[in-house]
Length: 103
View 1 (cartoon, rainbow, N blue to C red):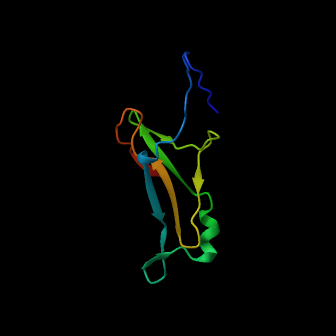
View 2: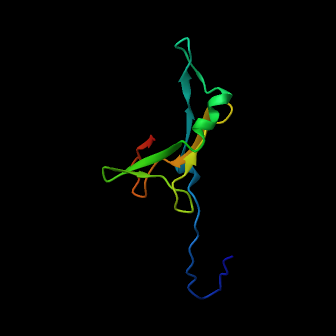
View 3: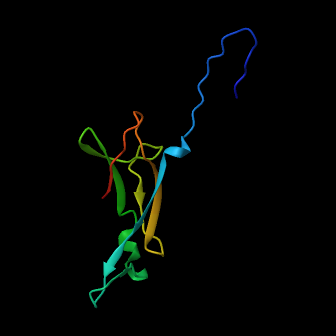
């Protein structure tokens, strides 16, 4: 809540996420079957891919884990469709593109 009073300076900060600076990343995990074809992860193998993936971003030529609001590395699992997705910032605070990788 912000209260504005007439004839006085009103210092306040409004924090929000710039929705325009979001890029959706969709990841599909495929495995090779006995016929050497790549297929979605079978149900029986899905437990092997619970919390198995995370993103890193490049900062000053070093890769660092992307963390959640709690400061911990945010991990991902494949769903029944063999996919997971996330929205991540496309640009840093200086307007430079951010490089990501999946680990």
